[in-house]
Amino acid sequence: YFLTLFTDPGFAFEKQGPDAGSEGVNICKKCDVIKPARTHHCSICKKCVMRMDHHCPFTNCCIGLYNERFFFSWLLSLWSGNLYACLQSWKPFRICIVQGIMEGVDSVLESDLARCIATGKAIYLFLPAVAIFLFITVMLGWHTLLIATNQTTIEFLRYRLEPFFTGKKKDCPTVESSGVISNFRHVFAPYKQD
Image (tube, rainbow, N blue to C red; front, top):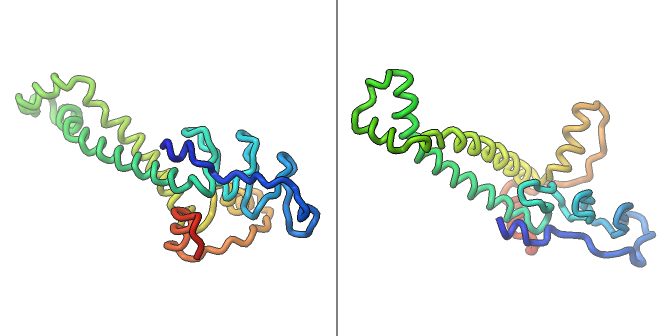
């Protein structure tokens, strides 16, 4: 989490220079910096971010070229922790609640009933654990798909989803997927070049 939060997402800092007037060089209209390909301006941070995926409400920072790997790793660790919480809280929930409701309290063994009473309201931890697990599963799956196909959330929404709903085709910048493994390598080792 802290690596996601404190790692520079890839802010574009180069102010207009001698190449500013040349063809093919994009200038941000809001912060007046040279925008490399796949750079987007974050309206919350007020800066341009290279390969910007989104501005995360959970970390309150941009997810971009240099911190996306930490964000993905954080999601993976959250998913693993929630899976463990679901597995640990399922048995008491099943015995005390599911079995007690489906078959009646009389069907619960006396030793299990004493454990249910001692556990108290903690038995219900299974329900929020499952809800959080499902939410994180969707987020992790979504970001796995985006990394595997060499896309960002912004690019997907702008060039794939918006034309689907509006019927207006937008020219997608040529972002070639070089294979799933290579795409993951580009996210997890952005400093190395092939």
